[in-house]
Amino acid sequence: MQKTWWKESVVYQIYPRSFNDSNGDGIGDINGIINKLDYIKSLGIDVIWLCPVYESPNDDNGYDISNYRAIMKEFGTMTEFDTLLMEIHKRGLKLVMDLVANHTSDEHYWFQEARKSKENPYHDYYIWKSGKNGNPPNNWKAFFGGSVWQYNSNTDEYYMHFFSKKQPDLNWENPKVRQEIYDIIKFWFEKGVDGFRMDVISLISKQLDFPDADTDNYVEVINKYYANGPKIHKYLKEMNATVLSKYDIMTVGEGPGINLENGLQYVDASENELNMIFHFDHMFIDAGPGGKYDTIPIDLMKFKNIFNQWDKKLKNKGWGSIFLGNHDFSRIVSRFGNDSIYRTESAKLLATLLLSLRGTVYIYQGEEIGMTNVAFSSIEDYNDIETLNAYNEGKKQGKNMDDVMKNIHMQSRDNARTPMHWDSGSNASFTSGKPWIKMNPNYTKINVENQLNYEGSILSYYKRMIQFRKENPVLVYGDYECIDLLNQYTYAYRRWDESTEFLIIHNFSDNKLLWETSIKTENYTLVKSNIDKSNQLFELLPWQSKILKKQ
Ligand code: ISL
Ligand code: CA
Image (cartoon, rainbow, N blue to C red):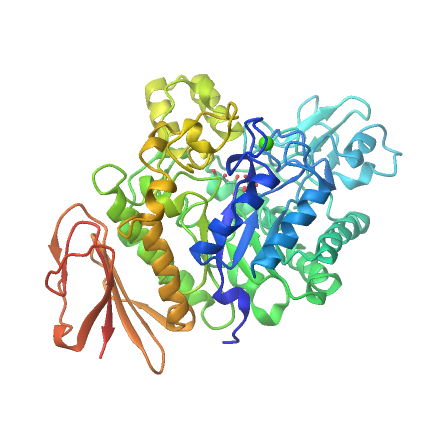
């Protein structure tokens, strides 16, 4: 296993709109981020991943880009971006940007031109099909609802969009499109950017015969028709050879449909494609038959199994990404922990888990202070396009709207998008104006300021745990083996190399329990726990994590 900086890095994800507003317009911005770089550095972070900051009409909060070489006006200017990058590097941090190359905004110049006529030089930048007897070309459904096809009267054709109709998919079959994207990547690398997270990269190569889907099951549809198209690896190899391989950068590809069968190929070092991927096996663990907004309880055995299988899959030739939350999912302490009576304990347990597994660790803003889900009582207070769609679909299908709201409270992407809590002042000092989306009212209790100088806080624990990982490279590179697969309350594993061995045990339950094992206690000493209370070595308080070291 070759050692490199990005394998050892702890990444901090920023959702700029909700991080820190410097000018009182209620929207987080680049100067706001600059003001918090010392904070990020103080956590022990190595790399910042910044969600899209490019010019965008914000139909999907920046994942609909209208100009890849300009900064969104609300976020600032290119000069401010350059300062941000300089300030990041000055502190020894790195910056990873978000590349959205599966689709553009419909307000991008290319699409504005493309839709004018079939003869337009940009027409072939997008995916066009004629209708079938006045209907869309096939029955594919978009991620945000409705058909993936939208009619364009100028050309009497439909264009394809996997996401909203304001996010037309690019035609990667066209070599000009691919070159445009490589040029954009190069533009940012020449500025000194240290890598890219690649949005829905698994979707860029399409099945050109566009067959009707023969099932309604969204996971099956994604796997069978949308993701991992026939030329995906050809494109990634070309991208790698043309531009990625020329720089000392990191890449992490995101995407639906990446699974245990196809995942390794994206990150197999000898394939020369990407460094890491984000798969969603554990992120859809509580999605019922009706999808994400049809929530079922989390099964810890299944959860462990997913981590085990992926670790095994990637251990020899690839490299994993360890994350539990991002801007598309609810808050980790509300989802995988217990955000009422054991919020502090369970947030620290999740920190221990994240920072002791094999792979590069990604922390989403606010996790380090244990920010929780929010439950707005009115749909009016939600902003996210996916959430609004889930609501409207529920209504159309005649569902019980109280249940729909309950699911939205559990799963809405806005759970992760309410602004960061800096202190207990007005609007958590995220803004001096009116925030673009309502605050989570619990900011008076949960915020950075009141955790900063308190040893027992979640924030302090994150710092110590990041430090601990840095001091123990076995936690990065060492081998991994889960040893309690059939226990439904605990997650225990060994991490070891030639010189060190740790046994790490987490209690994912509200009950005190004794971890049943034949391992002899006298061989181990406790080196770290999220709860400072002395008890027997294998006794676990509710949501307790223990890191034991083998003598
Ligand atoms: O958000 C999801 C589940 O709630 C995912 O299915 C998500 O749509 C998918 O992983 C792709 O996400 C990415 O691309 C989208 C954008 O809306 C997301 O914010 C982004 O992370 C389209 O660009
Ligand atoms: Ca602002």
